[in-house]
Image (cartoon, rainbow, N blue to C red; front, side):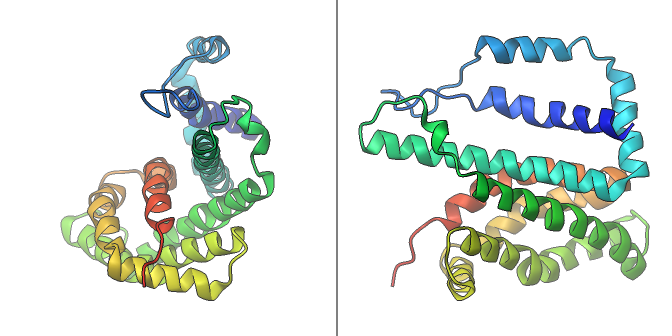
Length: 247
């Protein structure tokens, strides 16, 4: 069951992003033009023959029976996909700036950087957050999903966990990946908090998301739900954290 579930998770996580973010470098109108290569269409069509109810049941059972493994796999895949997209965007941007029209930019993808994101996604965003949200939070704030319980969990997550753990770890991870010191990472984090309204942007997205997480989403699917949303949050965070610090 674990192998079947793994394959299904990979299919339903990676293929939509693979199709959605295929691009044509340095297009005169836009740098990113959505396209649908034949191989991707064939792959997508092959998913249509999957027994959807059975597939959903298999994945659901895997998340219930092996929560930590499922959290690591889901968030590791998500982090890898987000980083590959970011690297591709960087490479296309460099190619456009240098007027190098070479479609084979994926040869420059950094596998070590991607591995670091896989480990960060799997270990922190997957396993650690599962433990925080599904083990610690119920013991601290109760297992209820009434309005008051959800509000307390969301508030603690937004104003304690996120500014003191989640966001600093993201900046420290990025500083390590780019060969910077941990002091540089924390300095950039502090700068973005003060100058770029990082926490306000974070809360504007994650307060409603986490209200759904703790109030509606089944416990064993919380990390998968968060992983889906955080794929797009990572793109926003990448933009904010990559901005230059002005003195």
